[in-house]
Image (cartoon, rainbow, N blue to C red; front, side, top):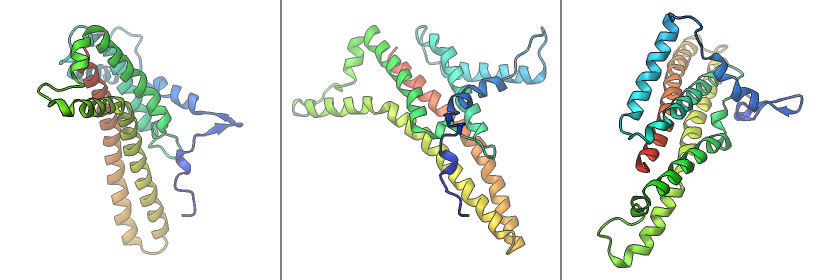
Length: 226
């Protein structure tokens, strides 16, 4: 109970060197690949999920937007595997770090916005000033729309970090309560432990949902600019 509540969110080091890069590169190694002509059930299920997700995200895009399909599928797989690995005991979740999420969000958002200004600059500029706006409100609306555009990558990063961090903290608190109650009241311990199991299942779902939401919002930003 005396353990620092935020100790699990500190970037780990090995011999004084940051190990975050190794942790980030580790999830792709867990994705199975097949060298045979006929795939097994695991590979077949994995390919079916990837095709289903890709089809759902790319359905609204034109030909130019669909060129991002490989990047978006890779993004959702990376975030999902990273979030799931972070649920393991004594592990580290890179997506709880705001800098990590910004490093993913800013380049993708900037690429989508730049593509929009290059391909259809009139429509891109029209977002800053809705049609029929009264003349006195034009300067204020342009400022508001500019701020809302620039805050999009920050909103992406903060949403992902906040949801993953909140779940980890809640699991830590309930786990600590379960350990403390185990020597005091056994029935209460069983109840709290059941809540912990249900929360773990919920966090698995949240890890997958947040990966999908992050990628879907990037896909929507791309759709608005293509």
